[in-house]
Length: 165
Image (tube, rainbow, N blue to C red; front, side, top):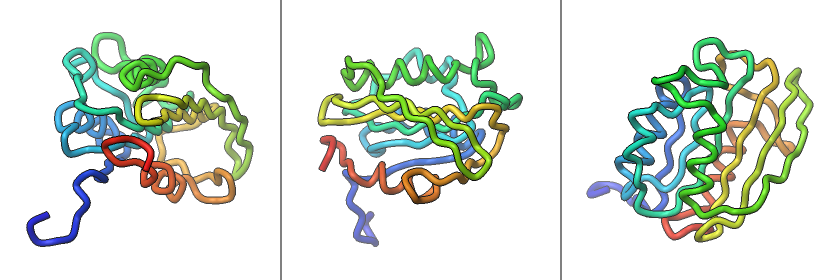
C-alpha cells in the first residue's frame, strides 16, 4: 500500500481448498486488514474457530459441495468444522438474527441451495452456496446471470470494514 493506491478498508480474500481454509484464518487473525472472504471448497479449522475474534463485522460467502470428499460438507471431527458451523459462527459474529432467505439455483449442471443471511452489523451478510453432490472444485455456475467468480467480486466489493458502503 506504500507503493500503490489501495483502499485498506476494502481488502478481500478468496481461495480454493487449502486456500479457502486460509481465508477463514485471515479473517480471524488479520481482521484489521481483511474486510470479507469467499472460501470455495474449503473449511474452517477447529484451531481457527476457537480463538477467532474479528475486530469488525465480516461479510462471508461460502461455496461447498455435498459430494466433496477432500473437504466434506460435514467436516472432519476434531480438525475441520462443518460448513454449517462456520456459517453459524459468522452470522453470530455479525449479529445476524433472522432466518436465511433460501433460493434454488439450477444451471450449468449444478443444483445449488443458496442460504443468504442479511441484516448484520453494518448491514453485513453471509451467503452459503450448498452445491448438491458438488465435488472438490472451484464452482463456475451462473448466479443471477453472472459467473460465480464474478458474483464473488460483486458481492464482496459492496463492503468496507464498516459494512455495506
